[in-house]
Length: 438
Image (cartoon, rainbow, N blue to C red; front, top):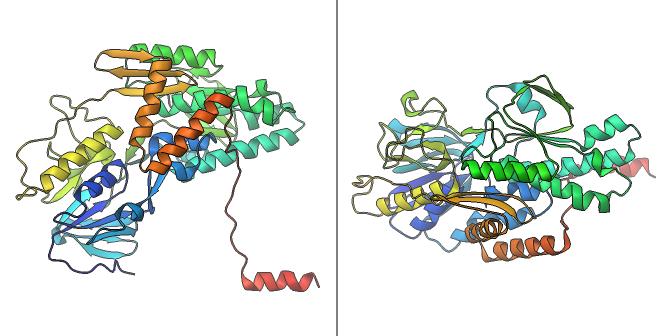
């Protein structure tokens, strides 16, 4: 296989990854002085902050995804390729991938992050991650499947295992999932499954530190903890998971939680690519870059978004893995690459902190912004507006808005569909079935 990309008089810029960073960079550089090749393992951009709403049947997958080719369909010298990059060869200025080898003049890593199981194969085997829309759909199907099995079960213990859910990780994803599940338990289960006792469903949230939302203020943590407790979520703070099986989680304090669905939201790691020298990676596996987004020790190779380790001033921890960071880095890199001396930047990147927020439930959210703290309805409305603003595509914005208004007015999520792909039968199999029915 090959890329089938013609040579050009323009320098070739290859962008690996179409998340917030890669997609934004490609949009800002399209039609300019580069031949651009955008690579991703999917043919669409995914709006990661709303994966959990797909999993909770609140939004349809297509409303938070945007086809890559649609955004660039009228561009000249712009190529989208669905591929997985397997190796980069900096000395030869080329990359190897699932569809062949491609040369580049400028290369940008923007692959984002992937689930971090901290080397534990059991955690990976028995838990459900939430880092893609396909994983969100899998979780949605798992919840609906288990509810259907619970209706048929006559054993109380089995029913509780099928209905219980354990969420590992008390960051924004874990908190938002716990809140959404609590609302599903209170408002949806009694209507859809009147023959099930909704009180048997327990939602557990496990957090290794002593508070939720570590990256936000203590006020935000306290409000989130109070709201979730009032919503019936069982919190396990200062506790971590030591063991896991298909129907149970063992905690560090010896407590065993019975559940068939274990959602892993406990951490991420950079999606690295072989070929870079070891000195290019930090201890966490992120690609080290300077304040100009240049990969340490390599020319014309950059990294932006969750995949890179970039410090901000005296903060040695590195910038947080947030969408605003990726968007600002993409904007910075695009402006500098468009200068006549592309790759020779004078001014380094400075992150402008736009605050942090998390939604907990209906009219419940927390927001931190430069010392200002909001909670409740004002924070919730701000959360809605910010997420609609950053969605790609007018259609997606409208559909998400309508879904949220409908859910708010009627306390209902209208997308509880357990749809599974079915492989087509081969001709031989079809003939065999046809003959047996004659």
